[in-house]
Length: 425
Image 1 (tube, one colour):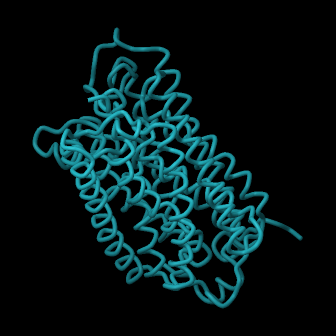
Image 2: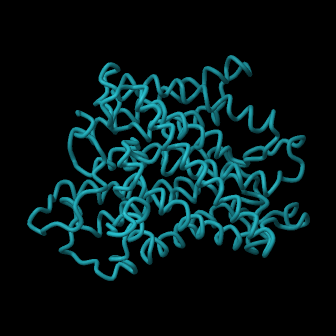
Image 3: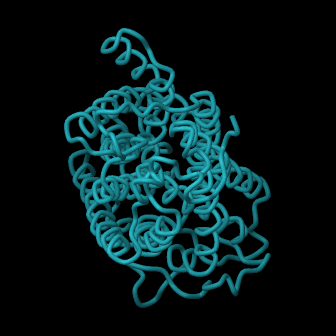
């Protein structure tokens, strides 16, 4: 099948011989790792930071920086080994223990034709970005240390096994579930966790009657631009080679983000009479999320159509979550990332087919069967992440408490949690 030519090479032999190292591929994945890390710091930090009110900007930036540090340590200690090494006894569900504390890491170890250190570092950036996304739903009313505690446990109990199921030769990969660059592993799992957290934590004071406008859209725009550029490390880097598959993934990603942004601009104009800057940026992010599962599988034209669907689906999802259901997912993590991850996983079964110009499906029984496999994959991950997230949020809330006091929320988390201010005006 043609799709095998663009299958993410996350599951190549472990380890290989040093004389098989490919310098060009190594250079590209080193660059991609930097690009994906750039998405979180400073990209996501600035994007989220500009969307909150002035009194909370530092708390959001601090959360992004701290989650990055925390998850990096967890990934080095046990996350990488349990997610992406081989296990003889429980391989379908979890990796092995050979790289706990990365104790056997050396310059000679290879995964495929890449140094294992580069492979582990690249995947670390994915592991960081997923829980960092969840932060956006909880901003302006969640305590700092309980948030970090949740992210640490969620990483171990949700991200690590999910990553193994799909990218570590786990049971979902064996079934033929397609997820090129994290539509299921990152966006689906984090999006549903964000929704669960927003429901349990409750709305911010004044929601939905009080308008809570972004304090600095210029900052958000800078962050959005960084996300767009950095995302090419996410998508094109997932080929794990400097080849045509990487180039096609980059092209498809860019086209999808562009068409999604334009779709959102049009919908804003039709509904509200004027196109919004925030809408253009949100549409772009929705397109990036929806193309993630199929970036290396679909054609550029397929990516364009996926972008139109992304802009439309996520636009109306925000209306549903906030205006109809009255759920205060503060920075729209589920309606943008969760919805795009779900739709993207399902649309991959359609647009990856050769009849739509794609590279082919993972199974030979056609679009409908691949669609069912994709539905199973995203469904299992959503249920697993939602269930674990619910238990974690409830336990943390009952023990140390998730939410700040009313007084701290009014005064702002910058002062209440960190004793500093983003601006001295």
